[in-house]
Length: 180
Ligand SMILES: [Ca+2]
Ligand SMILES: [Ca+2]
Image (cartoon, rainbow, N blue to C red; front, top):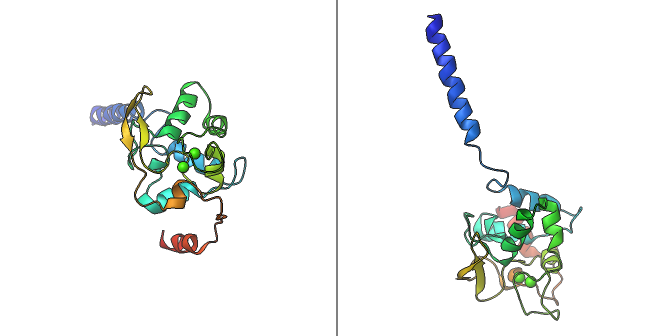
């Protein structure tokens, strides 16, 4: 009987060890989005509605950076920029800060030179998506094609409108808060 118990304990330990080995690496699914949300909640980053807008449009946060609503190894320009910084050894927070001044979606909207990632984030836009075709990058940074922004986003949730101040209390956002 003792031998049978030992065998069960051994098998259980083996299965547990396999489970530990199978745990995904540090950049697990959704962890960077969680980190992004925490960073842009007012401190240290600015307060942002960008991720909330994406969740309202697609029910997921992935397409802030990824081509697909389920994540995976294809990114928009903003996601690829973050990945480059992480691959260079930067932390999530450092990577976010590193690329705030860039215009990763290459939009040509006002202000001159396009909306920087920081301004898009601050004014509830999408730093990785602009109107029309957006370059999509693979794991090696090669452009593999183009994609249009997620269809659930409204015009000024893709690139902000400089004449319309965006606050978290506009009626559309109030409705979203109660529909999520
Ligand atoms: Ca931009
Ligand atoms: Ca944009």
